[in-house]
Image (cartoon, rainbow, N blue to C red; front, side):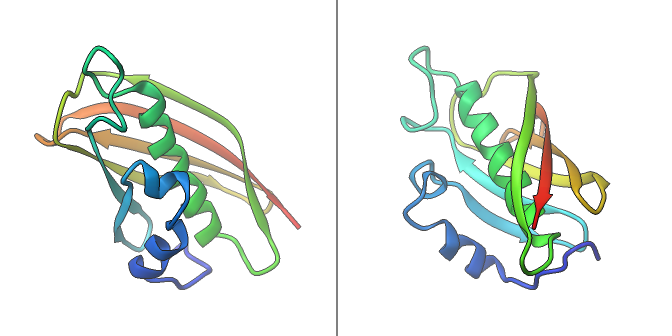
Length: 137
């Protein structure tokens, strides 16, 4: 298991209350030995004016998952900050919800790299993101 902090899904969702995570309707749904998952609705909060899931909303879901995974994989006294994010959008999503799955690509003493795959309601990949983080402290 890669997690150094032991939190439940309820605690993760409680931590997000009142933040942008909460405003976008992102909910942490699964915490496995080496992955973290969350869902986000595709609705008026996350669609662009043309009716499609906004790329920035996908990036926000990816950053949320990677940052929280980074926090879980850090030790007491460390702070995790994002240093770079990239996202490739593969297919449009217009309704329902998307599910993000975050897994580590590289975990080092001062740096982490996370891959976040985002799937539509039919379990088809609609976005692939990569988040790099630095561990401070």
